[in-house]
Image 1 (cartoon, rainbow, N blue to C red):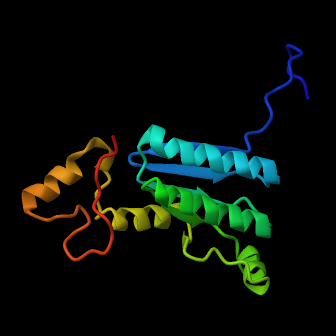
Image 2 (cartoon, rainbow, N blue to C red; image 1 turned 45 degrees about the horizontal axis):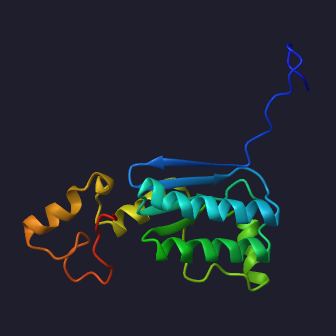
Length: 165
C-alpha cells in the first residue's frame, strides 16, 4: 500500500534489539527464515561487545512455531553470548510451542527460560546480584569496598562481574 506521496512504507521490522542498562532486549516480531535467524544471531552477539551488555533477553512470544534449526540457533546464540561474558534468557515461549518442542525432543538445554520479559529481567538481576548499574562500573568497586571478591556475592559459583576493555 503506497502512501499519499506515492512512496512505499518501510517493510515491517522482523526483530528489534534495544539496550536497557547492562542488558539487551531482543524481540522477534515474526517467523524468521534460516538466513534471517543467522543474521539475528550474529548481530546480537556483536552488540554484546558494542553495548558492553552483561545479559540478553530474547522474547519469542510472537512465534507460533520454533523448528529444530531455530532452537539450535537460540542455543548457539546463548553459548556464544556466554563466551562473550553475557547471560541469555529466552522468554515468551507459547504453550503450544513448548509442548511441540518437548514431544519432538527439542529442548533449549542449558539456556535459561522465563515466562515473560519481567521475569527474564529478574533472572538477569539475580545473576548480577540485583545490581542493574553494572554498565556504569560501580558494581566491582562496591564489591571491593565490602571486601567481597565477587559482585555476585561470596560463595557464588558464578564468575565475578568485571568491566570489559
